[in-house]
Image (tube, rainbow, N blue to C red; front, top):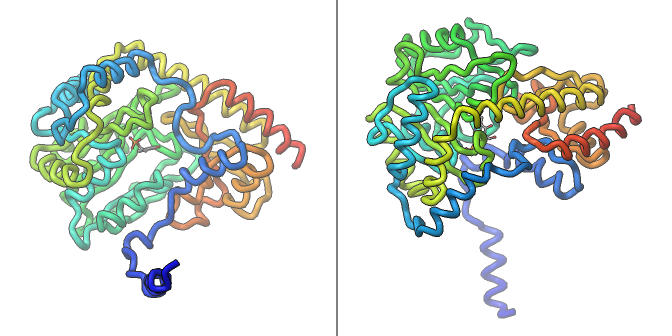
Length: 402
Ligand SMILES: Cc1ncc(COP(=O)(O)O)c(C=O)c1O
């Protein structure tokens, strides 16, 4: 090697430019890390929320047709018209909310980007966001990246209720928005009307936005009903409703989601979105337009099949010694692991993935203070029967080890 080159490499390493202080404030995703560990150790993956069964044939076919028809160039940055029209019609049908697809919808690269672009569109230095805890782990880095200071409000097991006084105490003059996720990951909680009205009252009192992540809207059990925050009196103009194709149509890898908000808010979200990603995949938006017009029977079957999967996994976990908090929505089961006598959730999750062969997500990744989640592990049930059978077989070793 040329000695001058090697010197240059060495001196660059010694004095490497400083990295972003923001990026240093969060770690890589624990959930995605668990999937990598599952692959490494050949474990049954009940950690990350992606279905291991096929997506609906007609939706896949619509994507193929779109590619074949050469819908392969940039769509309009805020979303293909056909897809935005379908999103508007769908929101009208499911929640009775009428939105203008020309001025109130931004199609993004998954609900992940919709959430971050929305936050970046509304947050100024010094702004705070209110977040229920345990929370979907992205909301932590989302706050850091957008510059918001999160204020956490605890959801208490077993029903994951919140104390209205705690919520009131988290709001103040610096509050810019509350972030809500219903049906909820990781708890399976479905917020009811009374709770949404408490949230509404605080949003009105402090003149804040609400960003609501409703990606699990169709996964509901035991008569739970999904109510969009935007339908609560007074909330239509101040709610940013986020959703995606990912979970409802079993296409988490497509990366197509959207944000619905009042025109002036949408204008800001669209600007951020345009310069961050330009747009979501054009042919997949075409397929999305078809997906959003699936008949009611599609959603009934989806919920019915997920109910069977939920009860199947609760049976397996209970049998293996976990205490399960029965979810009323979404596709995760939070468990209490105290009975296993491990020092904490991370140690137990590592033991499970390396020695037993099942991957789950440590509860601490859903809390600001890791100690608050040390007695929890989260499992997902968006898996096929053969995966459940494999997990049940592996858990037999866990029972024997106890
Ligand atoms: C609550 C919640 N929001 C958003 C996402 C990510 O959604 P998308 O794939 O649309 O980016 C997930 C994925 O697990 C989630 O659980």
